Length: 320
Image (cartoon, rainbow, N blue to C red; front, side, top):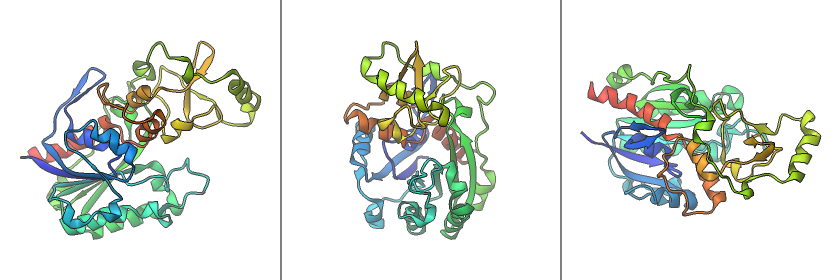
């Protein structure tokens, strides 16, 4: 049996690669799942360019609010890593608006499709900040709307570092089940590397060219004010990396984004290293867009390996 999948807010394809499987990462093979993506869309043309260079099927560059129900094929699973900027704890300026913000309301587009297409399952993903947004009022409201769309709902906060990814990235996964029997059978995946995290050093490159290093002026500026701020986030390469984000495209030593300190010199990650940190396989192509856009697309993505484990647990209830 093949499960047809529709993917909203697909970005460069982290969720989609995870639910498909059939890829290698850090000497592990993540088996193919019995899934087929029949429709995918995202409004970011740079992210969709990367997507379309990596998948045999193609996604549309389109605002999901403008996607007609009639244009979406029948499907068994709806995916949606709905935009997270409104809920992110990092997004302090402007303050988190959560459900009040226009981007924070895009999950309603998932509800629209759930109500009209009635797939057997849905998988939604968002940042940890979703749990506390709007003084903790946003998340219960989101769950309520998913339930009112006709689904039994389970959710869990998962850390990618617990699943073989060299990155501490906590994300909320929300799964919906049209049938109560499926809901009762499903359990979220158990951590596999909680006591033995994969270190950052396993995915770093050698022979990094000069442009990825910060200038002496930038380093001196950071050092002058470092005592006043919790910045200059140089990483311990023996541990998983701190969460990377789309901000890597404009990373500085005075930002909250992780950087490296090698032989007394600070540098940013290369786009390929960022993709490795996110658990994209080495043969995932990035080069079709500028490096700035590569960083943004990768930083916004769902780690494919983490998504694979969530998907694998879903596949288990179908085959048992």
